Image 1 (cartoon, helix red, strand yellow):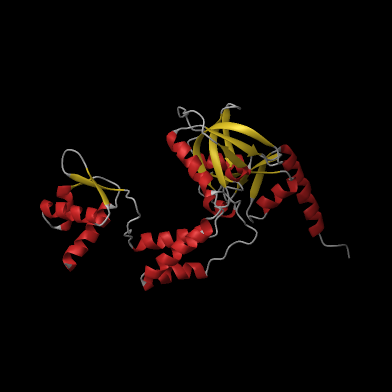
Image 2: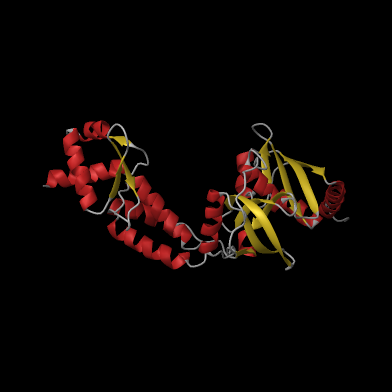
Length: 321
């Protein structure tokens, strides 16, 4: 009986990989006959698992059932899920914090001690950044948008701009992008005939959805760069561009995509683009990196930094005796 139970768990673990499993391959993996595999499949079905049989050559795929069956996770998967639940517990998705904590508590109760130590060690040296409260998003809105993306249905929604004004938009949704603190929808705005990036916490969905649409060519090959430019550069009065003499990875660690676009320019340099409504703020952001840099644009910023540098140099000169 113990051997049969262990084999069923091994079979279930294989079936949880999303693919069609030929019966002969399952038999080879388990070291049993195809007939035994068929009996084990029937046992899993009796236990409530939905196992679909593929047409043609005997094959099997695990399907979604009426309830959630136990999941089999290896060590790295279990740690990844625990860390993800801990992060979700302090995320900006409304209502998910308590649910995530309940799920994390259940998972930690069954984690082997060696894995609990790995998760606990990470938690003990991690603290939330004060003042980095995320914009709260209704999970039902996220799932509704995701379904519209999948089904290629246009969305109608009220959208509140940064100045508080609200108007009605119709858009063809393409992707949801999370920055960690905020969620963004990349979509083709049919009323404005162009690609737009919408903050999800500022939109209010109207029902029902609009008509189905034919997907367009996305706004760029690199969607991360596209969204980064839309939120860190484009909305601002001044758009600064710099060459920074440090590796792109080092600069990107200090200036995340929500603050700037960082592009490699060789092994030891990169081009940094960022925006602000203040020339002083632009100068401060790049100066605080602590590495040499050149400013290329806008012209006002070039002049501003030259004047600021002269004043700082004067201030550093020793006073006359």
